[in-house]
Amino acid sequence: MDNLIDAVMQPPAIRPHFVAAHRSYRFTWNKPNVDAEGVVRGYLASECGPRIRRISGFSKRLGWYWIRDHTIRIGKIEKYVDETAYYRVLFHELAHSTMKGCVARPWRLHDAREEALAEVTSLVLLDRVGLLTDSSLERSRRYRLLEFPNVDLRDVLPQVNANIVKLTGKQ
Image (cartoon, rainbow, N blue to C red):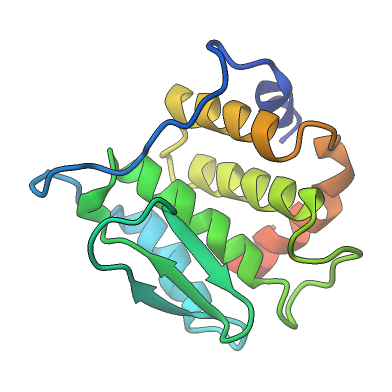
């Protein structure tokens, strides 16, 4: 995990700016990844699992977690640039959902450390299911500069490990 943290802490290759991971057209060949779906379905079936609601149409937000009703809003996989982009967003939001009675946090939902935790959890899960790519690392580097530039990612590792155990049932 240290190599992954070091990779995210590097500066992005290009200037940070909004890069849409959302497709503007309908037809694509994206298909669900069997290993990633196993992680998602296993967690959704657990006592802490949130509900997932699909976003219809286009939204500037790729996905989000609503703590109030313990629901993740996300578009269909076909709307994303590729499978990795879809699962990166879904795993990120699943990581946020663990804060509701599952994995204790010393901070609130809208804290930079919470965003760091969700992003690192997402990358670790992508790596575990074989979907981690250079482009997903690059997106995380840009996202880190925009959302949590002053957070040392090593500070959130205990919560990342707890999230991984909760989401996958394994260390």
